[in-house]
Image 1 (spheres, rainbow, N blue to C red):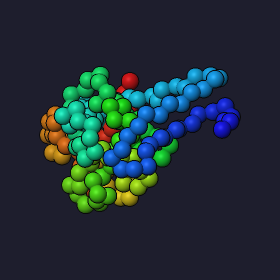
Image 2: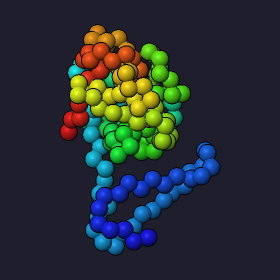
Image 3: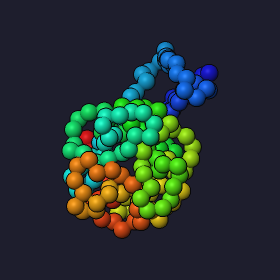
Length: 167
């Protein structure tokens, strides 16, 4: 197809679950730019990270000392989904679409569910589209240490719910 000049998000996947294949996109004009993957740092001084450098679906999202690796680099698309650079077709979401306090935040195959669509509030908190009164939270509050998992919790605006893009 012919596309006009502009920015486009191209997502390619196999139809059958558990199957994979390679895809190639070429252009004869201009360049295909890489997404701007950056780190997300909370107000406790830790970065959003994939637990154990694991990229499989169901892996917990946690906080960890900030490093410059792909397990801590993220991109937010126009739907609000946050993609991992280490696992480009995985998105951060609330496990099972849960909306109760303590629901795990994991990576999973990207989809259109609102439990993977994150909105920013004025207090730098991330709110899931299906439960906007809740926030992306690090277990343990202000005393949370590196390696603590992310979960959903009532919004309170604490340091463990405040995130900013860095880099």
